[in-house]
Image 1: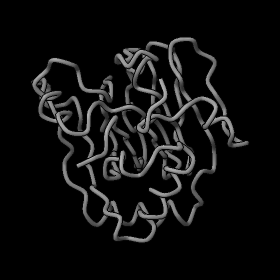
Image 2: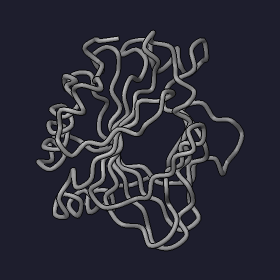
Image 3: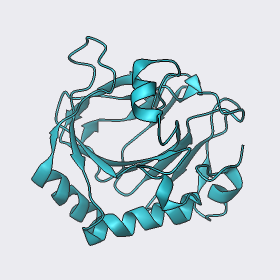
Image 4: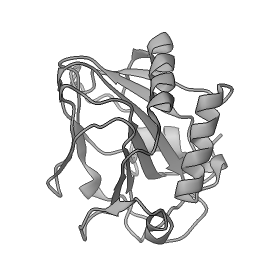
Length: 210
């Protein structure tokens, strides 16, 4: 699949420090030092000023399923605009297909249990959130700090656990080549055991956002 809301293996591997996880089930990429310590600190400061309890698009009845805080970031802030542009360059996806950047903040004991980023077709949340922009295509997530203990991201199906490190970028394709959702993207933001965890997430869509 190759469309305006899509990145590709070739696009991502053209960046010299990018690593591809060896799996036939999931396109998963990792690169370190995507953001500088200064950029990370600026983004953490923004998250600290305006975070709110995280929510679920389709509540499943488990009040402990997602216990982090969320911060909606706007591109009128220079560091946010610069990050959106940098992600568009590395992904090759036009900025029009990007959701607004979102920050997440995890205290000790907080987590986001195993979930996927795509919306289940034929579900109520799919009809609500995908009618205009379409399905989520790619996820780009950046850790903003080193976590003292815990806070890893575990991709359960492929048995890959990624430790949070300041500036590290993790990217994955939420769909198969035929456009169907890829259940192997199931991932768990594991509990923070000591300290805090901050991340930034960029989701892209099939069609322009908004």
